[in-house]
Length: 79
Image 1 (cartoon, rainbow, N blue to C red):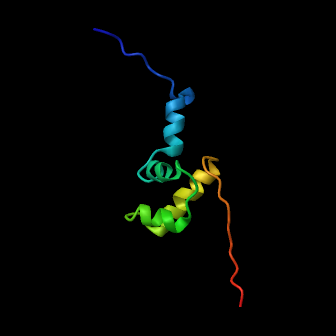
Image 2 (image 1 turned 135 degrees about the vertical axis):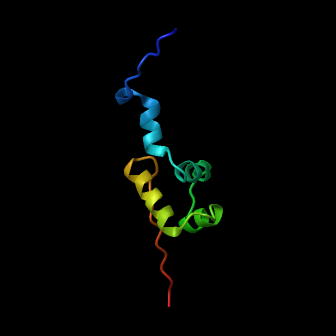
């Protein structure tokens, strides 16, 4: 019988990657961001089954992990 080698997961780059970008929504979000900048509303339309709260949370986590960068583009309307 062949022995199974135990892998030390503390230094495993695949595990580290999956901890950061794993889950249900992050891979989908990253898929849509791969082609360039998207506004929040665009992502909501592209991923219709994600709630606004969940999209916000996932984007914040990706930003904290320095996977994405948020740029605020506040537009002011003239009266």
